[in-house]
Image 1: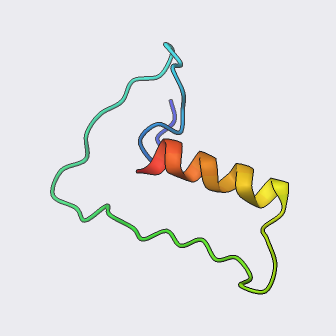
Image 2: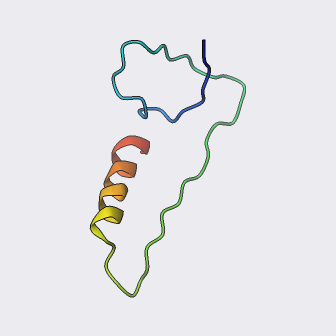
Length: 57
């Protein structure tokens, strides 16, 4: 048996996992993404930004 705290959506659609809500705890942790203002973000940074938008918002 294993126990982990993961962000909602990070496990995909794995049918072998059981998700239970955690109550009585503040589990809202800020996540920040910074990119340089002097140049465009790389393809990898843009892909990561899309993943953040898709899974964490």
